[in-house]
Length: 218
Image 1 (cartoon, rainbow, N blue to C red):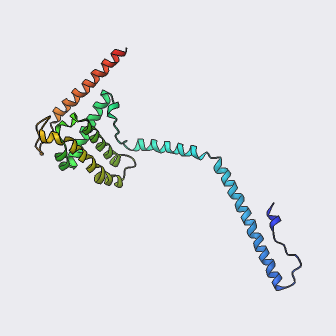
Image 2 (image 1 turned 45 degrees about the vertical axis):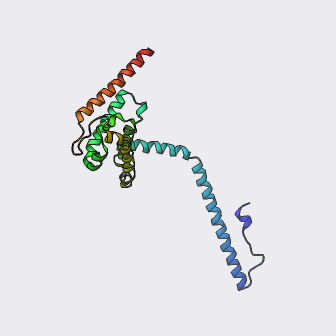
Image 3 (image 1 turned 180 degrees about the horizontal axis):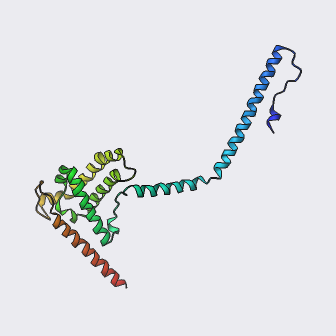
């Protein structure tokens, strides 16, 4: 049924002022009805256009584009799955972690470094995971394309204190009983050459195990 079927019509010739007023009102109502029908037709046309656009596919495509841009414009946050990493990956990750510790943590947070860091950290798998997370969260807050002051504040106020408390608890026995190495003076940095040798020996042992496993299956 079209708009014409719903239009109001006077039932007799207009003879009085009241009737003329009624006719004007009928005309207004008919005009509004026409406008409503036109609007409804426009809405239907827009809905049909949207339905044909494959919006879910467009959203997925846009997400991939933005992810690619973020990867190009920023440095992806470090995410290390230590148990799944081979010797080469572990070597690169440990050296990155040490570099971050010395250039960021020790430089800008010397009091935290002196209080929480111990030379025996490599002998504690839980501390390795905690420091890896601390470094990864720092990258998330500072070097990604979408890093922000809010992320920086969250790392400083939330993640750093939380993770360093766990590091302190994990190393407390070594600090109190001097299990692995003599306690260092707070002002003295870790012996980086000795630490690098530890990393080299650790990853060399990993590589030897990997080579032996390959030889056994070949």
